[in-house]
Image 1 (tube, rainbow, N blue to C red):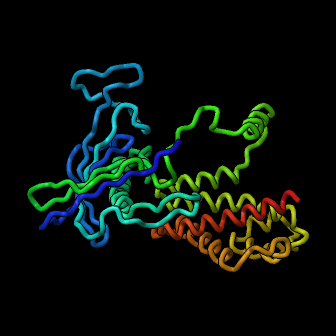
Image 2 (tube, rainbow, N blue to C red):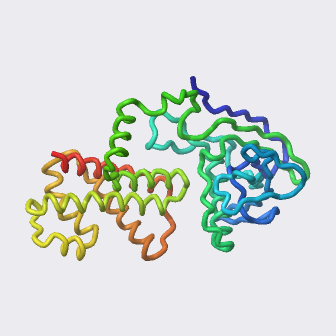
Image 3 (cartoon, rainbow, N blue to C red):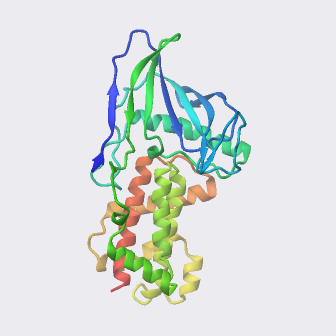
Length: 327
């Protein structure tokens, strides 16, 4: 059994100039309740934040008006934030936007929700920098499961609609505990744990990249994905150093840049697998360039679409190299 998103939209009254988006986020942003003006490009938004104390903390019932708060409450065990964002009516409400290629058979994301996330995560980024609360993380698209919207004419609010159970990565399903992982995977997990086998670091770094992508942290996603790529590339050069004509392996790996090393193996890689196209290579070169710009220049202007394309291409080449390595 699964549950898909539900959207309800009401007609817009005359003379309305702004939307109000209202929702909860999983944890409390450590800042004073209040209203904060945020500017991104041509759009100006007012973000209102209020800390909400949870009434039940585990088996404890919290009474009275004392503001109990745990340090580094990353998962909102004691409290969470209620957010309202007022933004000009310059886009269609609940309009469908981009679709993630990482996930199969999922609906397109909602454009206004992505716009709101930009403002919210800009706010979180600045709060994190100034307060040095290092544990604060960006809010992911799926963290805002439901939200309500109002129209505003400068004096009053009018219902605009709401979205419920919309996470952008698939439906919400009813799954029994025994259905989470199949028997073959359980067997593999048990073998690794019992035999103290090494984990596949390349795979873990790439999974971290996908998680960073969903957190809207596209810079971190690129860095993690390129790290995954470098690990496999290192193994590939060590195994096939004769075929690609590399004599002093460690010196070569240490002294040559990532782009040069990738270019060195390309001819041999294409001989082994003819599905590697020029577009994939171009995307990987762009990802390497972005990684270097991020680490050395503090580069920030990576769009979601750019990031997704580059991650997809990196995953393709990583899987090809892994297949060749086990031949």
